Image: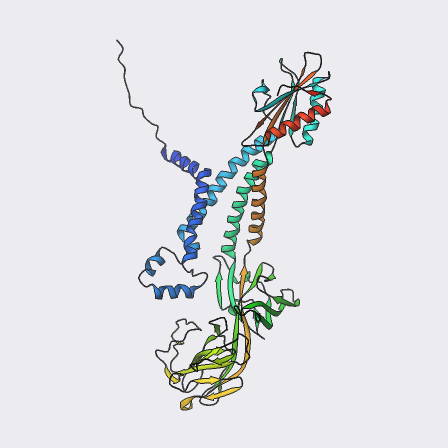
Length: 529
């Protein structure tokens, strides 16, 4: 009597190589690539929620002041450096590897299919979704097959003519729509191109901001920028030499609408540029119409007024003379400015106040700006003296004045505030000097973007769009024709079509093939279809 023996099934051990092969298979699967692409999009969300150091470090500092409890934790997990963080870079790199691992094997398979002949002719075409039989006058089957092959080539088919052999009739194997799979592959290749372009821009690109007052010139050097964010592989050699001189800046305001009175309608900066070749040009810089210098694009992103101020110290020497940038606070260009004068004697001086382009007073006798154009400009100023702390080595915001360690000289609340109109001078108390409102100019704020990967990114995006259209609208089909002698001595031409994937127009193609055969072989279509 035989006894059944049940042994435990033992699975073979994968080993290190097996586990690596398994991990690579999972990483390079299409589902993993789609998941990583979605994960990358989700990982980018914190970059739009929290301020980023690479874009505006001052906002990060302000966030630290406003949220002292949560800032250390968020900073530790790199929420303020999202796009250069370890976890974002890891997802980015894994997606890059996954896409390459997906594309290369599929490209090899597609190449082999493209080079190979269409599949062999089925023995029974009537089992295909679309099929039929066309009766034609007597003709040599091989000759008829060659004529039909020429017709199919004109319709974009790859054709393989097969002579009769081993009891099988002469036939044609044809296939079209190979561009569908090629479009699919190119779409994924273009995604890799976009990733490469972003990486190139992140490594070798840079962004910078500069404020240019009328009459001033910006030269594309590191020292000329007010703020600068270089890529990880940036060097000073990446800076392309050119200069921009702001000749005049004009703003057109709405004067007709009561609801939108004073709203800006158009900005126009008339500039003189000089490129690396020494070519001087007079150009116009407008919103959404940047200046281009090779791979550098200069955008107009802001504007305002810059009062020209002269400060003399207690000894009568000029301690400061020049334009001071005033930051607009409302649509009427009521602007806040700060001026620090460390070179004055006998003590350092500082000023803060408002510029009112068109000064008016309300019922409470409080000054305000009634119009954004400078019809009646005034400066209302508080003055201070003391140590400005500029020698401590700590960076300071030029638009913020810390008055906690300063002594007030003039203050509007005390009744001795300074109010200046153009060409007016006020003497400071205690022999500390004087301040003069010399002139009023406009300024523009520009963003300079250098992205060496933008050409590749644009080309990749264009290829992605075209290839996606191809993969969606091109149908991949297979067609077979058989040529055999009919019962009545004529030639029976059988046809059958098969779609690779969804193809709602397959029946329409079958009708077109039937009409093509009928027309060119002077036959009548058999009712069997």
